Amino acid sequence: MAEEQPTAAGQTQTPTPDPSRPQPGFLRRHRWLAALLLLPVIAGIAVAAWGLWAFQAAKGPASEITVVIPKGSGVRGAAAVLRGAGVIDSTTLFLAASKLTGADRKLKAGEYRVPASSTMRDVLELLRSGKTVIRRFTVAEGLSVRQVDALIRAEPALDGDPGPIPPEGSLLPETYHFSLGDSRAGVMARMRAAMDRNLAALWEKRVPNLPLQTPEQALILASIVEKETGVPAERPRIAGVFVNRLRARMPLQSDPTIVYGITRGEPLGRPIRLSELQGDTPYNTYKFVGLPPTPIANPGIESLKAVLNPMATQDLYFVADGTGGHAFSESYAEHQRNVQRWRELERQGAGQ
Image (cartoon, rainbow, N blue to C red; front, side, top):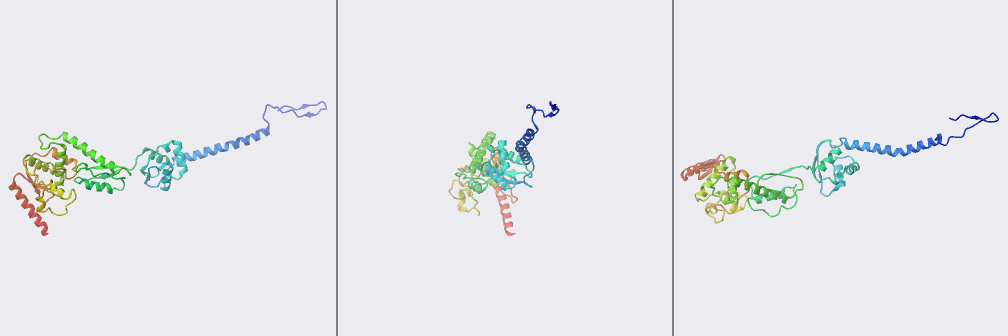
């Protein structure tokens, strides 16, 4: 501070303030102004800190939950679904986080399984990943295309019409994975492609000198083998019987072909009548030599393998043996004895 200077009268005089130095009043006013200007910044930092904490904190459901984000719902629609399901606490924070992270342009619709205690960051990453719930659709071996078509139409998690019924035998029985809302036509197309791909690959590995000229003929015979037995280990032997009959120009005499000629793939629900065994349908393998005109079901891979690599035997006949399998024979006389044993078992079963 400048010292006071004495005047001529012996009195002191207040020095003139130095204009280059801030004065106390000025400082007080500007400190308040600075504080006022800093308040929004401090508040913004506090809000950002809270938002970051909420974004990373475990605020999700107490247990695993499944949510469906509909197609076309957008980030706001997704936020509403998540908030309604209890997955997130704040749609505002979710929208802000989506915008800041760029996730608002990358969220994918679908069915999601959200783990317990998922943070908002976890949820955003899940919806960005597109890792939707994987569902399964299983088709058993031996079903007709009409039966498979009915199953696909009845699956509520699929969407749309499957389209025209495909050719018999063209769908590979298998378990197919799909997501909620996938098209029925798409699943059907995958089944046809799987059959085409596997049949072509197995045809290339067939044993030589089979009485089968094309992959389509192998498919027809495989469908008959599929319908003849439910015992997997028997397939190569039954295929061997039919291959032997084709080579000998003998009728295949397969009951499932008779049934297909009557119902076109639906269960008959009763024994075959004698008049049906004498019928003129092209599927009557008791009356006509050779293969029927089309497959009679959708065979599985193991039946395809069986007809393309059949068991080498001299068997020409087989009949049920009462255990779920079959008794095989090389001669008609032996076959008749096996038939008599089977009929006796049937009579015993009827009398119980």
